[in-house]
Image (tube, rainbow, N blue to C red; front, side, top):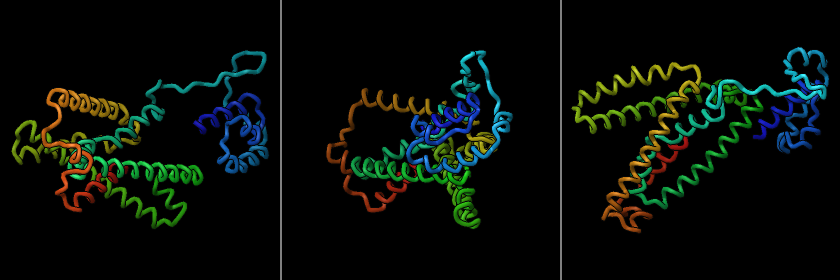
Length: 281
């Protein structure tokens, strides 16, 4: 929201008044947060030094014919679900965070207890918020928009290669895990044998995963992500309906719900933490 206000203020300053924008004025108007005022000091100085006619030629203006000099801001084209829009970006991020791991979360909660799982999820959410904020500040400060470029700019080119290698291994592992889950679900639903399961995984990798991996932009999958989120909502409805029809299982008590079965090893708790890390990855 802060960057949106900043964008509108700068655009109005350059296209309407055609005067260099002043950070003190923008800060007083609420367009620049206090934490960002120092970052735009150099930008103001460089803008004042630039010729006014150069800025007016490089930035197109839209006039409404109003004698008072008010001009209408051009609205983004493509609708609410456009490429790079806020809504499709939120849908893609939601689909990346919420997936088949929802079923795994419930399975781990049954083993280690809901209390342990909730505490781990809260800690993971806090660390994720902090890390994303740090990445956003580093990306804006360096002008780099990928993990590899940020590491190369702030550290060393070898760090960018290491970061890329870790991302590749992470994506390959995640993709392989999801393909295995798809194969298991296909085998349960259709009753196929081992050969049929392997053939299904191969076809899914060739005709579904490979074309999606060749997309130039992540927003290419925004419509598919919307369908996936709708399917997850359908799963929630199915679980609620099943619970309303059959009720709570007889093996579930208040103690086992919050503290788990009590007969699991330490590796089950470690596996639960790994699942939480994967969920927020």
